[in-house]
Every structure is written in structure tokens, then in C-alpha cells.
Amino acid sequence: MNTKIIASLGPASCDLNTVINLCKEGVSGFRINFAHGNEELWKSMVENVLRAESICSKPLAIIGDLRGPSIRLGELNGQIAVKKGETIKLVLSERSEGRELPLPVKEVYEQLEVGDLIIMSDGKFRFRVSEIGEFVELTALTDALISSRNTIAVANKEFDLPLLREKDLADIEFAVKNKFSYIGLSYVKSSSDLEMLRKVIKKSGGERTKIIAKIETKSAVKNLDEIVELCDAVLVARGDLGMNFGLEEIPYLQRKIIKRSIEIGKPVILATQLLESMIENPIPTRAEVVDISTATSEGVDALMLTGETAIGKHPVEAVRWLRKIIETTERKLTINKFRDVKGLNERFAKGVVELAEDINSKLVVFSKFGNTPRRMALLRPAVEFYVGTPDIEVARALSILWGIKAYEISALDYDEGLEKTYEFLKKKEELRFGDLVIMAYGLKEQEQAIKLRRVS
Image (cartoon, rainbow, N blue to C red; front, side, top):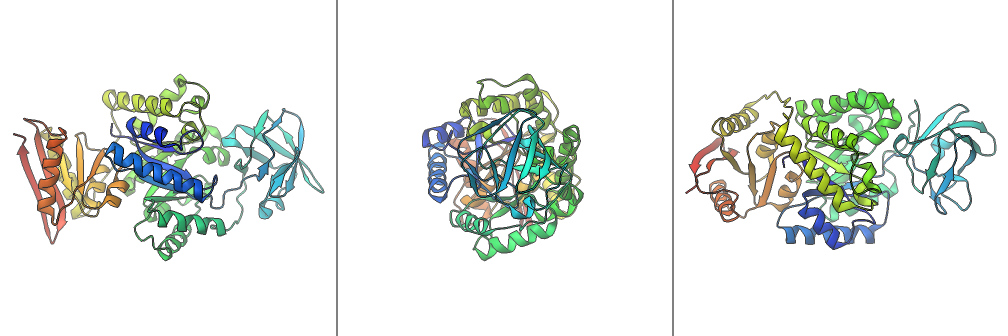
């Protein structure tokens, strides 16, 4: 399986046994959503992922998802059901005890106008602002079941909200301290947002922590190239895209973002409603299967499950189904390749990949910093692709990239590392008698190495 799986942790999946089972079913990375829970809960999640990493003997990336300038309801006293045509109050508050909806974001609350369309729950629930007085009155355009912390969007409006609040700064400190591989930023609008986050992360000591830019606003789509250039990975956040654009535009936007990210040279992740029905049901719908197959064939690096594994009734089954769909698609359909290489290092990577594909060999790379395997992964190699690295943090970051099977291999130099990786893979029976193997490492003191070997 070349397309990787990322699972969101939550009440349905935060215990050690479930994390291990998710890992065994093919999960390569775990997402922790800082919009829910607290540091004590997140710390236990991190510990369980590290235990699973040791038990399953494979590096696992941990992704921290900042709340950022997202607009969310406050705390409700239980779920609130609203029927189409009913009205409900929206109040400026952190929490509500009755049937009022609390909105703790003053900058948004005070700018609402009669006629505004308010969208919740990835576009499933819609309300119209029907009156403004002591409170904001909403009229339901659909049936809705509203929960605490639901994300909301106001159609055709973007608000000038602080990129990072105090909570986000504390969450960044937590992520850096616990060596998260990636931090995801919501509601990115321009490259300056990423520059600000990068400075905060570095100030917290996270020079090696990578940034995922979540593309979910109209400004992000407009400024796509500059955002992709500055981030380390891209996430196509279809939930909020579907609240900021017409739903009919999502397939086009999805393909555009995936294609452009790979062209520029950045990994790309797709999320939201991949297996939404499996939050309740043990098997997916046919439409979900087609959706996942389409995304896989478009060449995404990874598919991310959110509610399916965080709060769903069947988290392990959801991952199992996702893996089955990915494997079948990769076996029977062509995976899109968009990459046009430039520069010596990229051309070297392309040459090695094409050589391995031409002679149908396995590809083994040793890398200290992960740069060469990252370039190779962007080419979507049609051969088995293994990477050895002496740095577990590099291995974890590489683990969610297309096609890479990364392992921690202790070595003092590149030649020793390449040989140790080769012998390690033989012991694991990843390399078998008679296999052709291309072995390589990237630019090292103006020297690059390629070796061809048949396993004996």
C-alpha cells in the first residue's frame, strides 16, 4: 500500500489496544485535534502512539491540529435538535445551559447581518440569520443536531481573526515538547500566516517540526501557490471547503490542490467524510468507496480519517475498509503523476526511480535528513521503496509520504547506513533471494551513489 492512512484519535480510539490495532491495519500517522480535550488526555494519546510504534516496529507520525482562527460554538449542555423552519437564538457566550447556541467569537458575532447564511457540520446544517436584536435569531433551513464546539462558517464572508490565540501558543509548546512530526494550521489565508507560525514554532524550540497548511478558505485557494511553497505539506480540508464554496465545486478544487501541491513538490493529504457513514455503520457506502478510489488515483500521499476513528463506532473497521479500497485501486488503476523535476538533486532522484522502474527492482535509500526520499516519493515510484535513516524523527516524518517504508537504522556514515539497511531488510524478508535492488543515497560532499545488487 503506497497511499498512507492517517487516523484521528478521540474517545473511540485513544486506548492503547485500539491504537495498536489501527497501526496493524495500516495507519502510518495519528492526528490529535487540539480543539478537543486537554493536555492530560493528549499526553496519554502520545504515550499510546509511542507504545504502538514500539510494538508494531514501525515509525508513526503524530500530527497536532491547531484550532487557529476557526469559528466554533461554545459548550452546550448536551446536543440540541432543531427542525427545519424552527428558530433558535445565537448568543455571545462561552457556554449555554438551555437551547441557545453560544458563540464565543465576538469579532464574528458582531458582524453578522440579517440574511447571512450560517453553515455547520461540514455543510450538513444550514441556518439563515432572520433577526438581530438583543440576540441573533437563526432560522433552520435543514434539520440539525448541534453539538458543543461545532465549527461554523458564514457564506461569502471571511473575518479578520487572530491567527494564533493563547490556547494555540500553549498547544504549540505541547506539540514541540512531545516531538510531534507535524503541526497543522487551520484557515490559512496567505504565506504570511505560515511565516508567523514558523517563527512561533522555532521560538518554542521546534526547528524540526513541520507545518501542514490546511486549504479551506477562498483566500487559501486564491493564494495557493505561495502557501504551498512555504509549507511542508498540504491538507485538502473538504469539510470547510464545502462550507466556503459550493459543494459542486469541491471535486474541481480537490483535484486542483492535489495537482498543484505535487507539481510544486509538497506532500498532500485529503480529509473529511471519506467514510462518514462508518461513524454509525460497519460498512461504507458505494459512493464513499468510489470517492476514496478517485482520491487514491489522483495521487494523494495520505488519506485522513477524522470522525470515523475519533468518535465512530467502528474505528478499526473503517481503517480496514480504507486499506482495502486503497490496495485495490493501486493494483487495478493508474496513479496520476504530475511531477516535472528541476535541479540536480531532483534529476538525480528521478534518474534513480526511473532506473528502478525500468529494471523492475526494489529501491533502498539511506538518508540522514530525508530530502532524497522526499523527492523520490513525489515521483510516485512504481516499485517497492524502502528508506533507512539514523534519526527516528526523520523516519516518523517520512512515514506518511507516498510509498515510503521508513526504518530507523543506526550508522555513522552513508555507506555503512546503506549496507545496514540492506541487511536489515533481508532479515525482515522484505528483500528476498533473487530480488534486484537499486541502493542509493543523495548528495554527500558533492558525491552521489547508486548500486545495483541481486539478493543472494
